[in-house]
Amino acid sequence: MRKIYIFDTTLRDGEQSPGVNLNMQEKVEIALQLEKLGIDRIEAGFPAASPGDLAGVNAVARAVKNASIIGLARSREKDLDAVHEALKGAQDPCVHLFLATSPIHRKHKLRMEKHQVLETAEAAIRYARKYFDKVEFSPEDAGRTELDFLCEVTAMAIRAGATVVNIPDTVGYMTPYEYGNIFKTLKENVPGIEKIQLSAHCHDDLGMATANALAAVLNGADQIEGTINGIGERAGNTSLEEVAMALETRQEFFQAKTSLVLNEIARTSRLVSKLTGMVVPGNKAIVGANAFAHESGIHQDGMLKEKTTYEIMSPETIGLKESKLVMGKHSGRHAFREKLIDLGYELNEEQVNVAFAKFKDLADKKKDVSDEDIRALIEEKLIETPEVFVLDTIQLSYGNQSVPTATIRVKKIDGGSAEEAAVGNGSVDAIYKAIDKVTNEEVELEDYSIKSVTQGKDALGEVHVVMRQGDYSVQGRGVSTDILEASAKAYIDAVNRLIDKRKAPARSKRDNVSLI
Ligand code: KIV
Ligand code: ZN
Image 1 (spheres, rainbow, N blue to C red):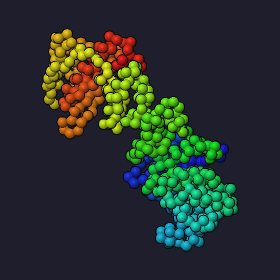
Image 2: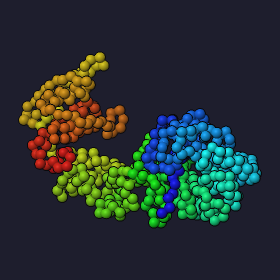
Image 3: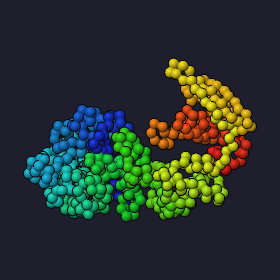
Image 4: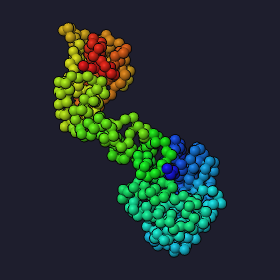
């Protein structure tokens, strides 16, 4: 198996994504995670761009011990000096310099003839070699450069001392066949090509960045450049997690592998998304939220019988816990029954049928049905919890300068009623202390959440609580247009379930939620 070196440019090309601006600490945090991921080479920035960029590259260079750190430079002495300065303290420094070679760039941007491009690049590479043992040269816009001129440029770079020649498809114009052919042609025609490494650097303007990078591998590329989550200039760069998983999953086909620590992929993706603020689309290959989620009934049935029916990779490989069966209108009975077992419910056939019909009803109105929805559906519709206490009245005294006081009156199952008052740190706290007194139960509130279930100022608020008493854990739910009343109802609901559960503990199976 050939080893493919992975060159990460999340901190340079990735940071060129519109709206992304990482500070020094964030760059170091990402770089350290890239090191954990086993990235071979990290391009940390473009030191000549600003003093901040130089300092950021330097901070990364000093922090990372197990990857080569690279700084980008134009083919100018001033830029190369800046990279030299920025990489002080790096264990394994490398400079990446570039000069455009395509006819469009030569004519309109550089206003240079071919021979001037060759001379300028050669002088820069030789200058860079004074500082660095490792020098990568990129003929920018190589994809649109005449192939014979690209061979000439590559031969010059090798003679001048480049150790890596990178072939950027700067504008994402190539198709896999054409891009692969560039590598084949260079390998077959450039003298001394065996002395250096060839690298692929693709952009995703036509959605072919990963395919192009893999075509380069098939044609002899030694290194792939890209970013985490595929972020970068315009449509972004090759997604490194896609390359890593393609080489892993189709090893026999590519006969090549990376040395990435694959189960760090998900964590790295999340960190990059968090610090760059670039949200990963749900359907993004490998790291999108839906990449291991199955919704259709047929797929879910297949997955439950044998995962390989619909999964070519396992989520655990990239560091995720498990695949998700998304419960929605396409889900079938098999998945629904498994979900019930997963949530800790043991229902008989008839109960499953009733629950399934109600679930389908709900799924018609709601895109994704959450675990909470299913719990509510089972507990509210199928499990009759005797109401030992029913909220009768609630009175509150609240002022920003006074201590909140709540008075709660409940009706009891035996026909009586009771009333208690309490003060608390806030209105909800006061209500819950008053309910503790009136029900005479000692409980621990483990979780409290509130959400609106309808829209507008008069939205219904739904409060969900999780309550514990010793080994028993129960949930309660309350809905009202008034969130304090919803809070009281949810708490009393949980107390009723607790009392019921204490009476029939044998019904509880997995996680102590109310079970049949
Ligand atoms: O896409 C590109 O051409 C680049 C160069 C700087 C290598 O990012
Ligand atoms: Zn690029």
